[in-house]
Amino acid sequence: MLFSEETFKKDVLSKIPPRDEFPLPPNWLHIEMVERFRVLQLAPIREGMNVLEIGCGAHALTTVPLAYLVGETGRVVAVDKSRWSFFEEITSVTGVKHRIIPLKLDARELPFPFKTFDLALLVHGVRSLKNEGTMVRVISEMLRVSERVFIAESLPVATNEMQKAHLKLYNLREEIFEALFGEKDDLHYPTLGKLMELVERAGGMVTESGTFEPGLPHYLAYIPREYVEGIKNKKRRVDLLRRWDAAYEKWKKGAEHPPVGWLLTEKEG
Image (cartoon, rainbow, N blue to C red; front, side, top):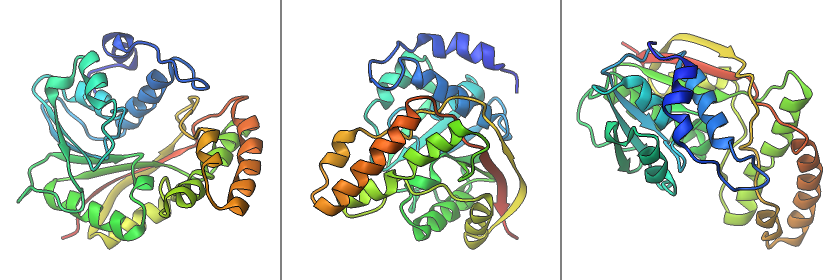
């Protein structure tokens, strides 16, 4: 990598204005992008690469540091099915929008007929794919259209009390979404072993893997209490409100990113 974290903060993050989204701190977006930048140091990214990102999300948390790292001659094709709320605003203000090609589509059926990309990435997105069948299909498509695939996801383990606080609140999200909308979302974090199993089921071969500690605060477990209050089933609403209140009390005192598992894979055979 030719770009340091400090340079990334100076050249890119300094352009993002503070956000007024209490109880999240004004700089939460900056901190989450630093975590993604650290994750991407583990991926084989070089300037000039043509990279596919699956699950870019509403805030372009991985897209921005990725577009920065591929440089002026590189391109990022950013795919998401529905979450685009702040994407254009954030990529524009950071100055990397011209390096990004956004595509709104279902990643289970990518419209590329051959290996179009040097690298495909799925960073902190496995948990948003709702079920294992979709996970396997998406990874299979990534392996079909890219020379190599890099996957990273938070792990369901904690090494200190602040990581436990994050997990306690985050682990309510799957139940809350299911109670509200009738289907699961933001699934519990998978183990590294489960990620490897999914890759193998998708026809991939893991060539490298590991874990690392981001060493940063983490804010994305938060979900507004009003969401929980909107659950129609009274029994589930009362139970989840009680658990949300207890988890939020710990979370607001400080939460930290849990360890991240990562792997690099190629198409088997």
